[in-house]
Amino acid sequence: MTTTHCPIVVLISGNGSNLQALIDASVHSNFKIAGVISNRPDAIGLERAQRDNIPTRVVDHSQFGSRKEFDLALLKSIEEFSPSLVVLAGFMRILGADFVNHFADRLINIHPSLLPKYPGIGTHQRAIDAGDKEHGVSVHFVTEETDGGPVIAQERVAIRSDDTAATLAARVLEKEHIIYPKVVSWFAAGRLRMAGNHALLDDEVLPPEGVQVGP
Image (cartoon, rainbow, N blue to C red):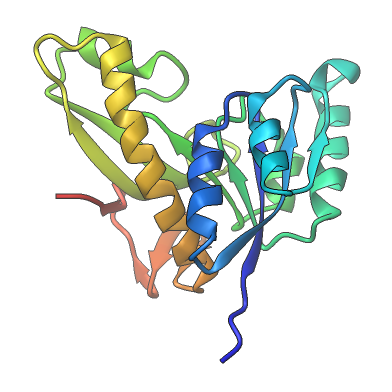
């Protein structure tokens, strides 16, 4: 039986640890990383991709006069790979409405909080400062609202009394490396889609917090 691998493009800005998790998982999964694109030429994640002979591109945001110009160049670079799914993995640029709408229903992101709590940055310290008992990670479809698209899956992490932002971030990152390849595999298998402003898995509308992964 022939196995068809869903082509994905991964967008990065830095170290690329979630990219590495996707690379490792793709060896025995149903998706293939067709290309990796960074907005920073010095992103370590580019080296990770190159070690595995994955094509890379740099679309340096600092070389464009406006976000719209950057978004258009990024869009054209992505389309060179004809991906079925675009995966944001530590991509630190806000994408404009035209870009998001072009890739509607096939653009996902991972965010280190239990959305809708703590969109944006500094999520680990914000959870500690709020006295939360748990924190975690969310994978969601991308819409025009920053970190506001329908949640696909979450995994929770208990906050310890002696946690710092760094120790909490490290435990959340471990969960990110597990949950992201799993969600990409759901999409590649045709199990996951977005309809309206809802995430559906196996044609069932998911609750606002998505699938709860883990123990």
